[in-house]
Each structure stands twice: as C-alpha cells, then as structure tokens.
Length: 289
Length: 324
Ligand code: SF4
Ligand code: SF4
Ligand code: SF4
Image (cartoon, rainbow over all chains, first blue to last red; front, top):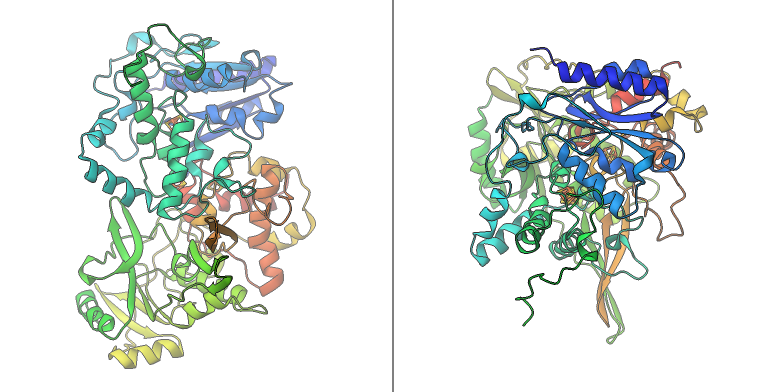
C-alpha cells in the first residue's frame, strides 16, 4: 500500500525548508536497528524521512538537548510529533524550557504504534484521544482513516500493583539490581533535562552513586518523584533501557495516581499549569490525616 | 568432535574443583553472562550476551577499601576473586580481554584486574551465526578467531572441536581431562557488515577540529549505553559511600559521554556533546593505537544494537574518512 501520509510529509518538509519557515527539522529516519531520529537541513534530504507504525520515538527531548537547544533562541525548529509526543512539548513549554514561537510542530495523524517485538499495538496507545494532534502548526494525515484503539493504557502498571507487597518488592529488587546506571532512561526522557542530575553530584554527594541495589533504588525513586505530574507516559525511558527494565511503570504509576485523584494528565493542555503549580479548592485531601 | 551435552555435563566437575563458572543464561527476555550454579541453565542459542566479560574482570562496582574514623583504621577491600571459568562467551569478547590486558596490565598494573585475570580461564564458544551488527572481521578478528581465548570450541557438523590456545588453556584442559581435536571446523559464517580502517588513523591524527564531529554525533543523547556495554571501555570513577564515621571507597564505572565525567579531578574539559563523542572515537581508534598498537574496538556491535537512537559506529567511521 502506498504510504500517502509519508509522501505528504516529505513534500511539506521540503516546502518548509525551501521557504525558510524552519531551518532544521527533526523527524524519523531509518537506521540498522529500526527507526531513528533524522535531522533534516537540506530540502533534498526530506526524502529520507519516514513515517509508519514503527515511529515510536518521542523526539521532544531533543528540543532541550544539544544541538537543538543551542539553536533554539535564533532559529525556528521543525519537529514531527504524534499527539502523545505533543504532550511532552507542552510540558516543556509550561516549564519555560521551550518557546512555542521557536518551534514549528508537524502533527502526524496516528493509527497506533506497533511494538518492534511483534506483540501488536503498544500499551501506551490504548484509549488514545489524541490520534489527531490538535494545536500543532499543521496536521498531516487523514482523520477519516482512523480506527479507535481500545483497552487500558495502564494495564501493565495495574498488573504490578496487584502483586502482593512481598511479590512486588521482589519484582523490583530483582529487576532493578540489573540496572547498570547508564542513565539512558534519563537521557531519553524528554522531561529529564536538569543540567546536573542530583544522582551524579559528589560535592556533596546526596545519594549513593554506585550501581548497587540500594544506589539503583535511590536513583529510580528520585527520578520517579521528580517526574510526578510531568511524566507524559511516552515510554521512551523503558525503550532506551538496554537491560529491559520497565522503568516507565514507576513514573506511569504516579501519572495514573494523579489522573485518578486529580483528573490531571500532564501536557494535555498547551497553556495549562504544571501539576505541582496548580491548586483547586476541591482537590481531594482525604490522605491528610 | 564433542557434543555440547558432553561438555556441559563436565562443567559440574569443574565447579567441584573449586572453579566458579560464568556462562550465558536467560533472564526474562535477555541473555546475560552470569555466575551459574546449575550448568543445565546455560544458553548457547544466542548471538551475543548483552553484558561483556568486563563485568567480571572490572566489575561495575567494587570495594577498594573500608574506613572507620572512630577506630582510625583503613582496610583494603575484600579480595573476592576466585578461580574462574568463562564458558560460552564469544570470540569478540575474548579479544576484548586481550586489549584490556594490554592496557590494565601494562606499564601500570591494575592489581585487582590482574588478580582476577590471572585466575580466569576463557573457554570461548565460537560463533555459528552472526547478525547485521557484527563487524569483528573489519577489526581484525572473526567468528572463529582465538585471540584472548585460552580454549576455543569451534563448531563442526553439529558438535564442537576443542582447540587449546594458551598455556593456561592447556593446563586447565589437562587438569579436567578435556582432549583437543584437530579435525576441520565448519567454515566461518559470513559477515554482512564491513568497515575499512584504512586512512582512519591518519585522518584522526590531523582532524581533531572538524565540522564532521558535530554532524556524526547529532543523534547521540550522551547516555552511557554504548560505553557500559562496550567490552573494551574501561573508565571508572571513585566514590565514597560513608555514614558519620564509617564507610567504603568504591570503584564504579564511569564514561566520557557524561557531562559529569572527570569532575572529581577538576572539571569536564569536553564541553559539547560532539567533543565527548569525539573522545569516544579518538580513544578507541587513535589514542589506544598510539599507546598499545591496537584499536580498542573488536567489532562486537553492541553499541549499534543497543543505542536507543541508532548511532552506528561503522557508519561514523566511514563518514569520517570519506571526502566531503
Ligand atoms: S518518565 Fe519515561 S514515560 Fe515518562 S515522560 Fe519520561 S521517558 Fe516518557
Ligand atoms: S536505562 Fe536501564 S540500565 Fe540504564 S540507568 Fe536506566 S534503568 Fe538502569
Ligand atoms: S548509546 Fe547512543 S545515545 Fe547513548 S552515548 Fe552511546 S551513542 Fe550516545
């Protein structure tokens, strides 16, 4: 089947670069191990962009990393986003890391992303309500061709929460003891953008730096809490982990709790307030004893 | 020729002689090298394990010393090295040990590493299959290459031929009654990935500053995946984990892509991601060549397989030396 959406994307990117609407655009390209980020500056290279059901990467993190971070002030940067990736961009805007006028967002109509392991549509896609990314600068794709993706996007989180406490403890201790502290999860996360991460500080050293079980627990608990109300449940962190640790289950557990208790989804509204900076008179307070 | 089963069934007797055995096993969806108790759990149906032999010779965390201010005493960390058999790692991983040996048991001797190496016998199982990321041939090794192994098992008609490579290997084989064979092995599997290193060193020698460094490192997010999974990367950090009066001094892995690298000495001199990625390439393909006469890459391809953003070292090496 002809990939009309991809063809249209390439056409549009060529135009945007030719007209100077954007100076550089970040989208999806092909690498040996699958889809990878592709920076396009030369309009001729727009041909190398791809779009298909394997474009899982959330590219928003590149906005706050080199080299885009440096060009951000002067140039207009083009970024390809799915509706869910757009949430991460919104959090970055809310947190004043990115200026909306410095980026040009191309939103892709998305029919769900397939897992690379062949196990079907990703859990994160279930129940998606942003298959057409409203609020981007333009949308590419035909909303008429969408199918609805049913199911519970937090099924994996709930499965772990259903374990008994000792089972859960043993699951996490055995899984996290394999963490090598390569920090791929942090570097991949669009919202882990601190210049200096507390886990690496040595003067003073706040937490155990070593990749021992206790050092790993400390790192992951701190990271989880630091992403409270900010995690957009994109799964980049787990995808990046070379030793298959489902780290996003931790951050998504907090996201789920916040959703259930406060009806808040991080990045849902472009000009919404950050979760921890907002307050409502009727916020539940039954946990204050 | 021996059947795999025959060799596996001998492993219990090696353990009985006091050797710990490190071998590939399945953990969830991963095949990892780990210390095994039960030889029946050994898994050889893999291309390459995620982790490398470095995990056991230069572990990701080890105690160098313990201190106690109240007692005013400092003690060396416990020596936990044991006579060890590495069984079922691949030729590229053994080759990587020969590189680490040249570096860590060179002019300066890393005593903890040297102690472990001295007690370790590497029994490699050569590859009958490769994948698209393997490029060991291009680095001067190969799917049946014996560099760094003490004993190598070569695939032959569904079984394995035992080849004794080093003195240590011969010694071990005679200790445990492992007989060598000299029949002909199956041909080596073909590798699809190739990269030439012709002209690379000369280019690196004269192009420390070049706009290409920015381009090739664009996708990198400065994590430690490719460093920590690399069988030859060996930088480390020293960290004190201490309470009010007692504590331990640890050696833990570190890597030059982190912006915090070498801050303990004074600062990270490489501002900019491209400068840090350049250090990775320079260290492997220039500085190590200058120092020990070999590149610090064995072509195992882990960095390519596991980089979350598709950074590909062979593509980069080609781009660096190509004109334009
Ligand atoms: S914590 Fe993981 S799932 Fe959440 S935003 Fe960061 S990368 Fe995405
Ligand atoms: S990516 Fe995986 S191994 Fe690396 S620090 Fe994160 S959890 Fe640990
Ligand atoms: S694994 Fe990839 S992203 Fe991480 S440091 Fe290496 S090249 Fe960069």
